[in-house]
Image 1 (cartoon, helix red, strand yellow):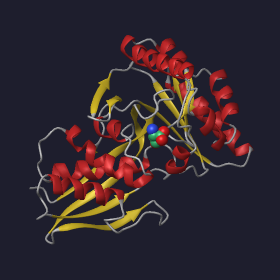
Image 2 (tube, rainbow, N blue to C red; image 1 turned 60 degrees about the vertical axis):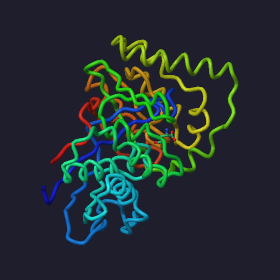
Image 3 (cartoon, rainbow, N blue to C red; image 1 turned 30 degrees about the horizontal axis):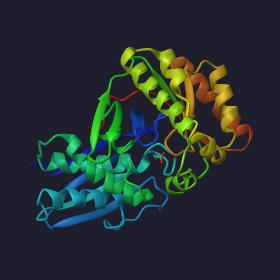
Image 4 (cartoon, rainbow, N blue to C red; image 1 turned 180 degrees about the vertical axis):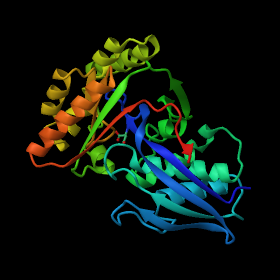
Length: 310
Ligand code: HSE
């Protein structure tokens, strides 16, 4: 058995605008890293966390990575083993980019690999969802599933869990801007309406079906015109500085679509090429600077691989 492993797991864009809690995709960067070692004493320890400004607990029972790895060990009956975790956060917390998911998926993938467990990675999903439940009060899978499996993922059903990997056009770029304001997922979920009108549901499921069809048909125009969210975005956009201004700027600069990444505050645009994605991130960053808001920007293609051993 290997004694030490270093794993990277990617950030993810959940919802993909119209698919609240059911669609997500992974990007190449940013992401988190976990270094895991086998120790002599049974149980999990977390010896180090970097890049979190002291926000995350070292107590393995309070840390999403510790909790999800423990659930995994319990499920395979390996409570005899000792694992030490170093978590290196390489992405902002509370950004809407699946920060907790990247960490838990890196931890679970590291544990599975160290233990030589050959079962399919999708089997780790319920444990990663436990981490999400702890992080924001709800075990949604639209960040953890693409972080774990890579690519574009549909959560067709939660009970029973039914995960479908979707194709996507090659050469589609994602421009991501994280405005440096705090939007905790737990709170961003609490402000959403619980009941919706049938006519709004019709609009929304038409758009979800349109987006999924566009992915299968390599039809970027269809993807773009389907990425409209009339249920969640009108509420959550209030938490994001100049959201509609940023949309206008992105669309005028050649974006295919624009919306909130996960629960925000990050926003993202799809583009047909890298140059347009870079232009959009620069323009939006300049705009945020002009209203005195710092930001991080990322440009990536869709990451089809998911976690990787470094
Ligand atoms: N689907 C989740 C939400 C994703 O929108 O609350 C959180 O990143």
